[in-house]
Length: 575
Image: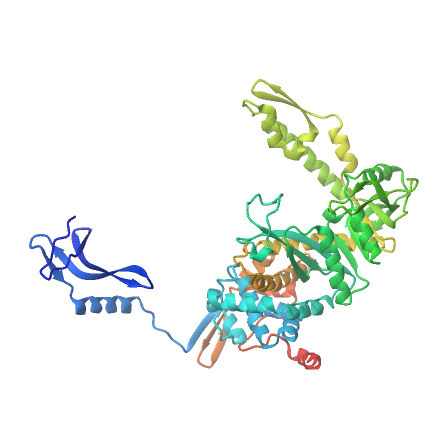
């Protein structure tokens, strides 16, 4: 469309929208050495007369004002309403485990803002940079009397300050570790990041998420109830052996000299075991059944001396065996350091470089479940294999079966595949079903080993609670990463405590953490001027309170401290 010249000599820009043509005056000027275009609305262009009908400024402003008034809500400052029950639940949980008290002793007055932020993460969308909305629609802001904004910019500043205060974070860890009675469980996982975070996140040759993004590693320690007590952030390429050494350095620093450390089977190696006993530490790790020495122990189990032992209302058949360490003559560790082999009595050099113990355990209930699962797996794979029709049927079958392909003999028949279960596959599986091995230092009893083995499972559940949250750490700053990780750590502590109480009440089939929080959040608080009240506390909410061992809410709380009055004396003494 052309740009006709108007009476004042300007060249308006004409834009058609629907049936009307609008005219704009476009000019430009230089700002900071750059040309900037400026557009000003002139009015509606009339093609019949070639003139611009100037806009009615008063009408336009009046219309906008009227539209704004139509959309506006009247703000009633005297009335406040918000979701109350979920906030109350988390507050009671954190008080009973002393989390707010430990935070205040570690961080001082800012601890209330930190805990409120962690609760907002637990209650609402699990993203550090979007919790302001949760504070506004719940009673959280009024519950603790939080005046500060927690919008994206404020959270960026807060988390960076938190992450920079590493000494305060370590002080919090020391307080949480004081509650560890006998066992500390340690596990690590990797997280993806959107940047290399000043060298902390690194690209890995093997990425478990199959994503071409840099990774960093997080180590998490839990107590014997599966409640997190400490975390550490490491470069993505740091090996598990180094994280074990750093864990024990931390335990030494925090004064935990006699706890039993338990690890996942991924940490099991002769080198790691040798390093741990070299530090005079006790440990428990599940054995790897693909190691020759552990295959031998499983084979000998049928003829070995066994005892029926009880753990948590369950009977296990258990044999105990001596296990040794010897310097390997033909292997070295991946970092070039000496490697150590596991040995059994009668092996050459048995126990020359250290002695351990192995408990071989058989669970008859698990045996039946695993045999049934194995038979169903074989049946399902053979049924699906009968429908394969492609150019490379063997390749298609192997992709379909995955690791279970080792249980089958496979041959191509044109575009189809002939599959038969191996004769010894079921007998081999049956010989291993229901069995597991626990590797320990010689002074660890079977009951202690089983308790540690159970904690390992609970630590995995703690990681699952963490993975429910936003999987990406959207920051390029290491201090902000540390601060955001601290908020998630506090959130996971509260979630794991709720999960532990559900488990201890034997209510896992009826309740979970999310269900508890969502049901409790149906309780709302209302305050009009000086009068505050709660909505109905349902039968379901009362049952949740009973299961979690917290009082049923009866009044509206406001401007609360994050610690209980009885904690004040110990706080003053620590100062």
